[in-house]
Image (cartoon, rainbow, N blue to C red; front, side):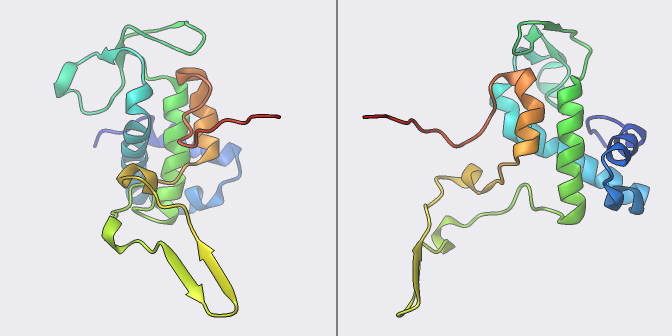
Length: 164
């Protein structure tokens, strides 16, 4: 399997943060969670990653990359996997371990509820997501970990404020 980081490093990362669920799981489940976490990181941040895949199209993961720099314009070696990518993978993997498939859910837009009303009690209308990527969770800790690599943050929430 091709995932970012290592099983041993993931155990250290989660132990330092008191994530006991990681320590309680068996290595086979952790390995699968790391793969799913890597797939999430690639899918979520692929378009923001600098440079090009070192191994071209045949390379499974997005890293290592050639010609890559971080948000401060420091060069990243063409054989390196940035620590931000590794740590973001460990965070994503923890969520995948808890709820497999939660980071990359299947979405059927025609089955989404736009409005649900309980007469006389509550009437709530949620913002309708736009496209399948809008159904992916935005995990603030992962965005914060990735910010030094890709700049500012990768939040899918964009807006502006005007003061009058």
